[in-house]
Image (cartoon, rainbow, N blue to C red; front, top):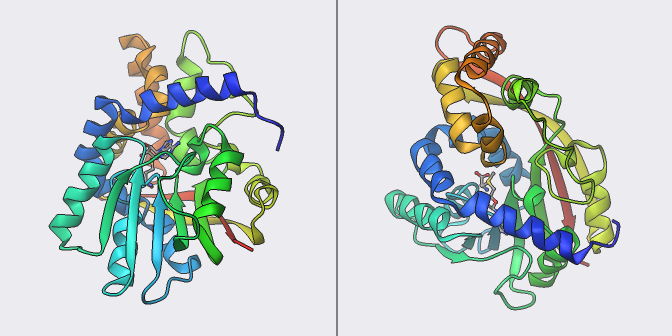
Length: 291
Ligand SMILES: C[S@@+](CC[C@H](N)C(=O)[O-])C[C@H]1O[C@@H](n2cnc3c(N)ncnc32)[C@H](O)[C@@H]1O
């Protein structure tokens, strides 16, 4: 990993904070969270399978958003295990807390926390999990050092990220929007966070090894994204929830938007069986242990 430039990192930090903690983002996740949980269930299953959780495990989930996978982990390690769910902003994490209460989970606590400076003592956790969050950490080496610090020796971390950009999750949605925007955005900074950064094979493995994790393993996996509704509804959700792409969508004139939407709906048809969408999703699973 190249040495991060502090002023660049600060810019990433401010941008990402605004993107993920803003009212619009939180409201969209409140509206769609139950459908998203089903759509991305394969990613949660990958975490449950690879985290090697045991009865009594103390688990830290980073960037929990509205509670995935923290709530599923709490249900799995109950009654003797405990989970700490964390997220950057109060909006997401208070919704996660509300959902846990509805599910009757009592072995989970909630904290606002940036992955870059975790408010937890050294060697507190047996396992650390993070689903679709690691791509947004402004200073990745610093966040990974924090992960190692709070894990007990021998403790295990599992990170799940999006795979390559050239997959239907992107090509049938934001990929089409990009072709229609009047001013295309510059390519993502190679040192900065970006949603498909770990689609580059071995990048997650190299990042974990460079941070000092042992027994590091990276796997690319295709899981089924199941959406129990029509393409139009799936797009409505994507356009509201996908914070990194909302500024692009906002650039389109009504005419360009109409054209882009018709291309999006025809691209999504391929995955529509008349009742539901089933889209192959490529995810990257990175695991490692603290020496
Ligand atoms: C795509 S959402 C994933 C949420 C959830 N884990 C899931 O899979 O549904 C990304 C989450 O990362 C959080 N996040 C972004 N940067 C972060 C940081 N530096 N530290 C902790 N969380 C962060 C955001 O607030 C957001 O909730």
